[in-house]
Image (tube, rainbow over all chains, first blue to last red; front, side):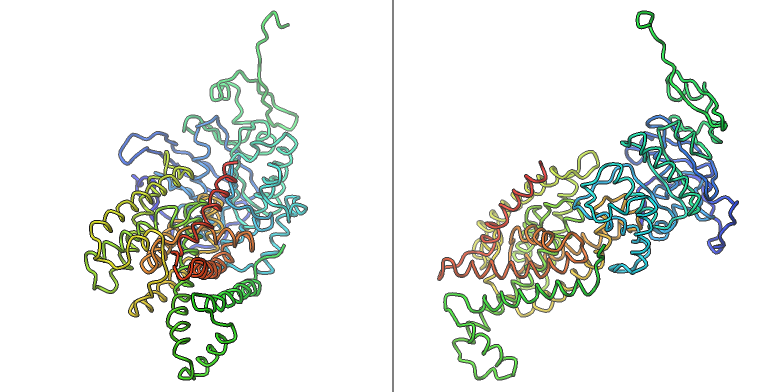
Length: 296
Length: 339
């Protein structure tokens, strides 16, 4: 298949594919090395948007938050990690394999992606939707096995959505849909779980619930979780690492305490902010608002 | 939770197969010369037992040389158009897609007419030219139907409808200026008609092409289910998007080309039948493709029987019957979608 993306300008070296040994628990699972990307309107025109070389690493059971304002390149980075886009330079490796070079089937067995919005042309029931996560494991017409059904039941249970099993997907609330979509990703039994702004359109309770669940899933299922989000405080509370992007540049990578620097965040988000470090060493961001004299 | 099993698939298909047999029997019986069901069954029994010689000449002529070939042609055309419709609906992510509405049938008809004008005696030229016409039209409609790089449902339908009326106008022009070169005439190509039997040389090509293209679309059924949730999502779930789309594009154009080259542009079957099957059996493409094939066969045989009998001894083109039933359904679906 030809990917529509631009051709790599730098030669991309690849590790020999023969080495399939799984790394130990503390080895790097996801390695993003100097990965960059550029969107162009057409062939030879100047790029409309560029994501400059970005690097970070994540182990299993780790939760990484990708932060940044709109149009900072968060979703592009996520698509690069997912292997949907091929980096212009650098590489993204999952257990030593370049994600953009895996065939779609193998990729879907190792990487699950929860997108922002999904629209269904014809409605299906929640269990059918979750069953779609078993697609990369079947062949031909993919008549589902007993095992597939057990996996679907477990996935629904893990996200606390057993009761939604027989409901139509287009008739449940946004938060419930989010959980069912997450269950579908779990049914893929991936190594890497990627989520693009999963907290969008959720109320605060559902947001905290979701992040807590992701934390727990990363622990129980040994996932590496990467979340794109706008919620600075939730990310600070739940993430092991934060990657801060601004206008296609990766400004800082590290623990939330390292990344959440007041001047840096103020410059990136263009708002007056206050950063304090909480009792557990996790930073907390608040907005500083200047009151006018008459209002006081 | 009740996932699809082979057993359930075969069970639902066999129900439709029984209905199809009943409809075939009815179609053999009804017509300008009515024949009782018992006689039809007895005659069929004699044919099966190899006692063809015992049939009365009159019945044999009507039932086996006029009605039966026409019914078999209808079955194949109906199956081809319905499977093509279901395929286009997934390919374009548009529930209103149909070979006729999108102008694909008119493109195929124009291809077929051009081949008849250019080389009337080359046997395979007509279906191949119809296939090329169908493929080119759907490609054109696809690119015209995009807005800012995205496939837009309304723009796509408009592009299809405009392509259909433009191509119909070209067909009318050709048929008027070159009258007499082709015995089948304008109504055949624009409305569809099953009264012209398949030329003997076409039979096997038609059957093999139909089976191959249907099997090709069916092999992607599980992928099409995911394609309906969106391309990027399907890709993340392991669907080889380019490959699946190419297979469906070629096979659905092929099915339309085959059907149109032997029966003209019969409309709305590809829209009507898959939607009816979705209402009856759900939206799973693994069920939808075979049930649409059978349902399309049933629909066309019924429609053609009506076309032969309502104003007997005169005949209506079968396309007039399907359009009368299909156009209101199209409007209903369009309005439901706009709400």
